[in-house]
Image (cartoon, rainbow over all chains, first blue to last red; front, side, top):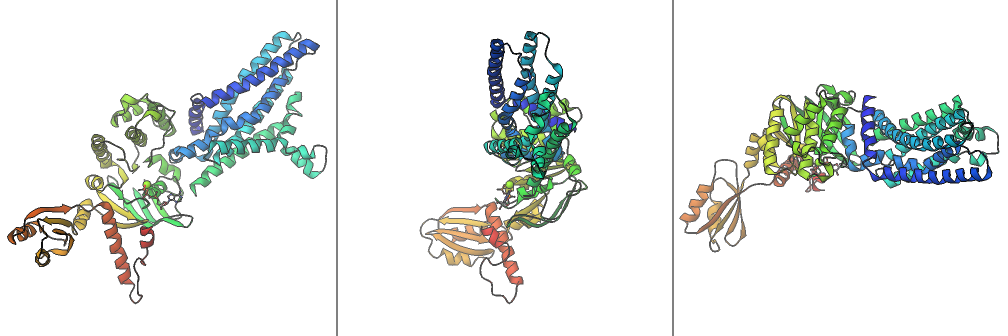
Length: 243
Length: 330
Ligand SMILES: Nc1ncnc2c1ncn2[C@@H]1O[C@H](COP(=O)(O)OP(=O)(O)OP(=O)(O)O)[C@@H](O)[C@H]1O
Ligand SMILES: [Mg+2]
């Protein structure tokens, strides 16, 4: 675990050494700012109370595109430049390596979430009885879990390639599939439908976390996705040795 | 310290190394010598735990490579061939990261120490992307030394270093090699001769010779080649030269120019010179040609092939039919 932490610290710092991180942060915050402005404006116009969870769900949606951008280089670049050779000949286990990478990405997204939370803070100054802190907290818990899952998929996708662009599209494809996997069976029942609904990101995210409910099943689901994909990523890294 | 038995690595159909067996003891510097594609890097990657062999056993620093890879990796310092480093990190950041990963005690002091050792301290704050090839090589070397490894495995450590640095690194390796085990690969025979206690020559994935540099060079020097040039067309000289003892072959290259292969034994140059001058020819040049590493390999592998052919009695052998010569030709 100590090694994972060492890897994570280096990788986290690297985010600020590359323009990609700033571009991602800029894009994410810009889009959110626009939506916030529109939201705020319309609630002033129509006198309806603004919904603070909306900026959270927007963040999750945007992560569909930004999670691949944040994670694409993590393993791919090590493979392309050959630095993986030095990591794998140091006393570091594969799972420590991929966990470290994931932690770094998670930390970076955590930072973006803190920036995102300023919208909620601003809102709370304008809404008279105060915001519903409970449901907002649930939305943020869901955000962290969903982000963690997407980033784990990202680490996995990145480990498959030594080309960042290839990794980006593979990750985005995987995340999208996980997101929409239950859409074809949305109005159906039966075994297949219920299995797909259990597998789907959106069914776990939108139905509960966004309505202010933290459900153990949903938490278990996202944690399982994280562990599973990190496990797979470690196996991929290991299998590269055997080629 | 390093024990290797029957090590084989196949990349799909291609056999990169074939049944290597060798060892390196404590306090020994072993040179791994071979042309491009011989399998040096492959062997080193296996010994550092980067990839497993297809077949065979190896133990490094007393631990089995397959079952105790982590223990091996703790005790090995490795300089990979093209020195992969993170370009966006500074030298000191990078070394600090590697030291932390290797759980080096007193990290800051050790990083400073190692930077002094490889003379990179004045560039500590430079980004790796701004370093020259030789400087990067030194950073790679520093990284390999950080945790005071019992076994040092260096893939072409002299590559890209200026002569001054080559001397420094040789001195450093001798120092390290006195107590630890060093294994290094190189294309350059002179480096191996100067530095190594023992040299293993590998070609086409197989060991073709293994000995101390002195004995190896004596063996190699056996078949020295001389270039002779006389004024004029040198008519009649050929017959005279052929009559001399100690020459295994004489060939006319051009008018007045001869190529002479000498048999192992005492230096025949005085004899040749006196024959030329005594016969009334004007001696322009008599030069001993150094066999290049490539020629030594060709010679060594040819001997191997011939030996194999001789062993296979009865079967009419065509050229290059002996095992190993296929891959050597490719
Ligand atoms: N990843 C790989 N996939 C397929 N073949 C490989 C791979 N790596 C090496 N080889 C092959 O294995 C053989 C040995 O290569 P290796 O890199 O060990 O040679 P080397 O002795 O280090 O050569 P050089 O002096 O050029 O560094 C070569 O024929 C090479 O093409
Ligand atoms: Mg090599």
